[in-house]
Length: 162
Image 1 (tube, rainbow, N blue to C red):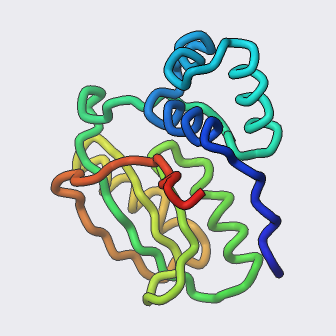
Image 2 (image 1 turned 180 degrees about the vertical axis):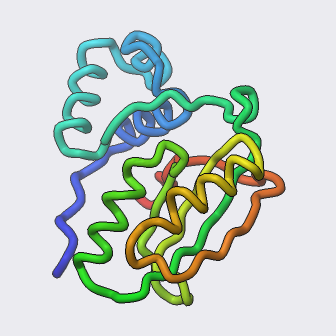
């Protein structure tokens, strides 16, 4: 199964994407000014990038620590059986937990899933782990690693390859 052919991206589209990755809250006028376009063509290009599915969504990034969410945990989850039903149930359950920022189905290690979770402190993490994660049918192992410092923390994609 091959990936769909990527949408053609020119240097102006690259500049738009780079600017929006840095600040998704730019007004169309601010974006147009920063990439050297007038507002109407800029708006059309952004709309085209949205329609192509390249711009998926725009988010506001909050400072977790300023909100009292001081503990970030990377959790490796092992499942007892590798069946589509087990995986679907697990994914549905963790999708309901606001503490889960990211969930990846992974290979190449003993774990089946890698989760990034944010909570206020170790006590809240213990409650999350015992009352939510370990209660999901099929979870057979949990390994937690605690983030000491965020060295690189971005969701920006490298646009140099386009």
